Amino acid sequence: MATTKWALDPTHSELQFKVKHLMITTVTGSLKSFSADLTSEGDEFADADISFKGDITSLDTGNTDRDNHLKAADFFDAEKFPHVEFKSTSVEKDGDDYSVNGNLTIKGETKQVKLTAEFGGIATDPWGQTKAGFTLSGKINRTDFGLTWNAALETGGVMVSEEVKILGELQFIKQA
Image 1 (spheres, rainbow, N blue to C red):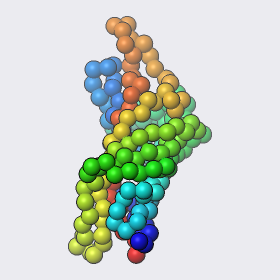
Image 2: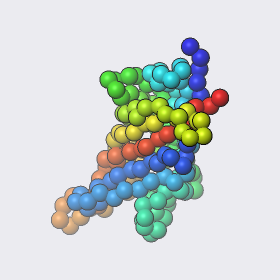
Image 3: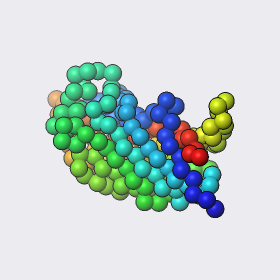
Image 4: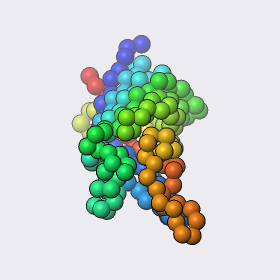
């Protein structure tokens, strides 16, 4: 079967992260600028090769002060480490979904992570482009990647949870 290349459709894709704040509510942020490529055997995505690169300077939580703190040395240190990157090591079909294993690099630290990609299907848009859609989810521990800043609360607990949820809606365009 022929190898098929798919390029991210950035206008129909989003990537978010969610973190507990004060351990009572969840704050959502996103990367506004990122790219991804996918290579598959035809229209079958088991054993696909996936790569991702996100621009840390595009990080947006809806609060400029918080965004600037996240981009500073306490967290991502965007000046030294301007990108977050992912490269798959294996993709396995798991029912209707896919288990995506790979190396995630944040702030110069690379760790193995496992993500779930729910396959939304393949469709042709009104301009004749073939597209494939996925809903991505997973969890990481931010301290594994050197994102260790925190503050103890007088009432107990900490300001920011270690667990970070990753959520994505990704649409890819089949390349000719």
